[in-house]
Image (tube, rainbow, N blue to C red):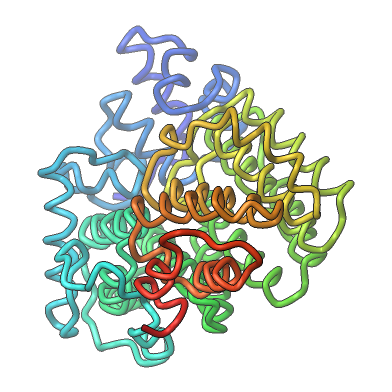
Length: 428
């Protein structure tokens, strides 16, 4: 059965039947009361994910708003960005990835087969993107759960597990997208976009040129989905590849243009907008544009004051005050004023950050700041914290280079050589 042409009436009738206010519904799905009013009057279009969230809150059968039957199992909620936090759900995601990977002779995310210090460079990113295994279409709920498991591997800094699982996931998502029509095709495109976003993030960590390919594919799939959050995710990773290739000003223009398309007054899109502004600020700093970098940080600060939360979907950057503070440290260091980051570091509680990858990145920015200030002891202490949070993170090319610079710097730091050997910065 196709979706009704009068979604607003469906949502309004269900809300009235439950005796809920527009404000109550809005808080449940991350929208304002005025936005719910516009939705009910068909004055505001909402993406598929929001339809499912509204359907869940208002006890509406999902097929009435989605255009195709939706299983009642909770795994479909990962498409609508509802978290699956408990251990049983995490195991389900790993099992789903294992099932997807079985036909492609890959290893499921979460198996822990990779050595702790081994990086994804031992796995061919070229093969991942240019020689995907054959796959059959898979149910959307399976793809959604598998993609959530892949993001879980990324945020836990299990990069080898992610690299092993992505080929099968991408293949299944592409096959499903190609075999689908209508809304189901849009949903499959969103899942595919998020898989390529993770591939681009992984390639960027290895400074691999394949990040361009993955980011470009991510944005094409995201635009095909028509959903603003996957488009924001893909825009961000494409801009990172542009910045790293020396096109910082182009990256800033891309990010700010996409941010301007998002409503800062809405909780979900406002959080996405904050993440885009943060990446734009760092890109401006990389291009030496101090005025733009600081202005974008201030704008991100204003947005996060209204919506201090992580964006929905599979964003790997959260839009919180702590995240803004971390970006300020990186921006000041990049602009050549690392001393401006010191008071920020002194008041920063990195433990508040939501996952190992984000905490490791925060400690990395802290290490770079101390290194720029000539304080090798503090820089090494921060690198040790990176290793404690995410063992595979310290073996990234950028971290190995920082470790090597410290090792051959003017001051001797106890334990640094052993650390350099252990992380591959220097030969044993």
